[in-house]
Amino acid sequence: MKASAGTRETWGSSLGFILAAAGSAVGLGNIWKFPYITGLNGGGAFVLVYLLCITIIGLPVMLCELTLGRHTRRNPVGAFKALSPPSSTLAQLIGAILVFAGFILLCLSTWGWAVTMLLLGAAIFRYSWIVVGAMGVVAGFTILSFYSVVAGWTIGYIWKAVAGQLGFTTVAAAASHFVGFITHPGWAIGCHLVFMLLCMVIVVRGVQAGIERWSKILMPVLFILLVVLIIRGLTLPGAMAGVRFFLSPDFSKINADCILQALGHAFFTLSLGMGAIITYGSYVDKKQNIFLATLSIAGLDTLIALMAGLAIFPAVFAQGFEPGAGPGLVFQVLPTVFNQIPLGALWATLFFLLLMVAALTSGISLLEVVTAYFVDERGWSRSRATIVFGAVIFFLGCFSAVSVTGWERIEWLHRIILAVFGTARGSFFDVMDNLSSNWLLPLGGLFISLFVGWVWGPAKAVAEIRHGSHNFADVHLISLLAGLKDDPSHNSDVHVLTLASIWGFFIRFLSPVAVLVAFLYTIGWLQF
Ligand code: PFF
Image (cartoon, rainbow, N blue to C red; front, side):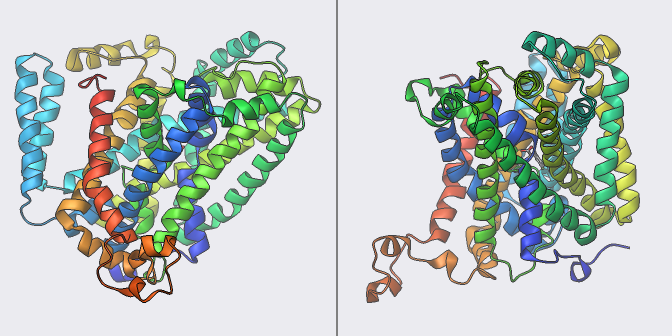
């Protein structure tokens, strides 16, 4: 039976919803990725650029997604199906551009890309904006398949920390142990399986009894663990050098690359561009202030990313290690750092537990996107959808699990990808990461803001936002900031600078242009 809009489950409380959505946002991106890209991009200056990206792109796009979800009460595909007009010139234009690009690629003989473009263009002609929702569901599959592999490593490292196997005296020793661990198929696949099972056990129980209940338990646990680790790091002698590195900006470090990394990360960290927030928004009731919800979710996500930096850099500097150690920062440098501190095994256990908890609340939101699609659109039961697609994602993830460092174990797949697409940079794990982080998420974000800004229209979106938002959308910003709240002019109709009008401007112009530029740069079609 198809779940009708009237019987759709909703969050039990607004706190539950905020914690679940913040749980989706706060994940490996905050604790594993943010500190190392900050380290590689020179610390404080990168943090400032990142905060700017969150404010001008992240917040507006998140509000788009929540609005789409709550208005339609559907998964991403259903949401676009409900709101797509019968014919959309913009969609046809995008379809035509893709078909044109497909023909050009055909002449250049990269036929895999050409066929992809032609099929995508044809799909857009046929299904219009619904394709954007479908891209979200596909992104849910691909991201969870490799995300779960990294999340699995954290489970393995909790085990190793408890068993006292992380007592490294040099980073080189930690690195060779790490490589041995992630390339061991038994460990890699086993841990990936445990993580997928945890996600499935939670999602199968539904929105209130599963996702909300566990987010309410796990998010406070995450916060407490982080505070304990920050106190431990900051009280080490020499910790202030780490704080200075992390928070004092050096603007000479800012270049195009750094800005684009910050923008890409803003999407990933806020779970934007693929419909996770549309799906969570679809369980929100009309009483919820979604303006405030957007601010709280993005605020919590940013706070936790900054706290993760404060938990990591002071400890790294206090023990005299390198901050810009890349992706290995967390799995190689940190265990070595903890080993030099009294009760090191305890701190290592707490840290990897923190990472696992963060990954779990994000993993369930990724699985929920796929589940909600099959429940809403295909009429499947929740348990069938969760189990079947949890298993499918697990199998897809096995390819990433066995090929993090290279293709040796799946050379046949490598050959197929090379024959079809001409390139296969890095490993299968990298291909999946690249496909979702550099293609599906930015394109999804671009299309979502174009759709809300130009097709559905800010007027209808703002009417939805007004439910439960008091007069938030219509607050006259300038006179409010100027202290003229009680002046008669404050209530006049001629004000143009309201939160709603600024948001409309951002999603129509600023976000699409910024994302398009970033996207073209990332795929190498634009150079600075
Ligand atoms: N926001 C998560 C993180 O920062 O780790 C990753 C993520 C979760 C991306 C859910 C997308 C998503 F739908």
